[in-house]
Image (cartoon, rainbow, N blue to C red; front, side, top):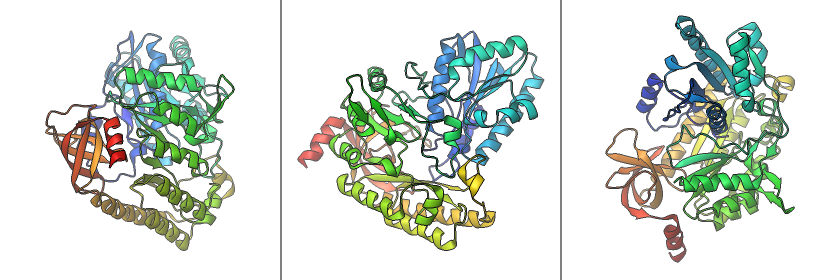
Length: 499
């Protein structure tokens, strides 16, 4: 799952910090609280803060839906909250430590208040660390796992009435929240997440997700299409369908038809010709030619795939239990570029995994040069409890070596991104306008079909417009463009076919 900036619904200092960020490559997006823009009214106010990946952000929309339907509201000001909830990520140690520090800050606020405030932890970290958080460290009043969000109102009432901590971290084999309508409080009004499945069966050696989110289960096709249609009706122009491994999606439809992810993506693309469709995250083992052909056939399925490689050496991939070799991955990349000309690829890379030698590290660098990713999320390996690596492998790469190898990976990716973006100068792209740029209200920003950020002068364009833009300059992470006029996805598809 691609990491995104953490949502903190309402922290002025964090808003200011994010506004000051530049557009350079960032390796710490997983650990920054995300921001939300909209409050929801209710009898009791909840302050909700989210850490982690897109799936966590989507989960917070489910939490907001459950709370709203039970009379709760959302506030941007923790000092006005009756309840403070932190939706957590357990994928890296750094994320957990940041959440712990945040919980300490919330407890300090609670002690200084004249009115009571409950503190709760939701999500992956809650499931994994429930005993420590509740019994040993006594940091929180509420612990709720990712499959127990429907139970939040009851748990809040129980904790309020008894004064005792309330817990539900039971994992489910069926829960997909398919019938709930998310409250999109963190939305820009044009792009939305649609969760299509939950859990993961891959059991990669380094990953704690199967232990915190349970087994894979796919959501009914009809509910996914209904949610996408509702988004179109509300004026949304882009959806990103989500799952820990979306291309392992599988559902038997009401008429007995087996629906694969490729078939689902094709059906989503037909909801509206003006709806851009993205997805995250893919596992290379399930990225089929059928899926690549949907990219090629449907003009509104974005020509971009996040395809995590994790490492460039086959022996390390085997230790990681990734189920493909370096050669198989490169063959997949070659097929993707052949079937989908101009495809943009991003990836995840881990530096310093158990037993990694210098030569194996060099294999990662050489794979990066060969693939030429447009973007990468790059991390040092950090051992997570309960994983196969923690139980069976030695975390034997020294910390300073991990850091040096990570820096080499980041430096190389930045140089590749600079070249890739420089090659865009003179080309035309269709950009979906997301709003003002970070640095100037006189400019707009938006993403290309290939998921590259473009900044250009405002003219009379509005958020949600599709605009043709010619690229005139570039940095390692952002393209600078000259707007050529409004367009539609259908018009651009027809123009490209004619051209």
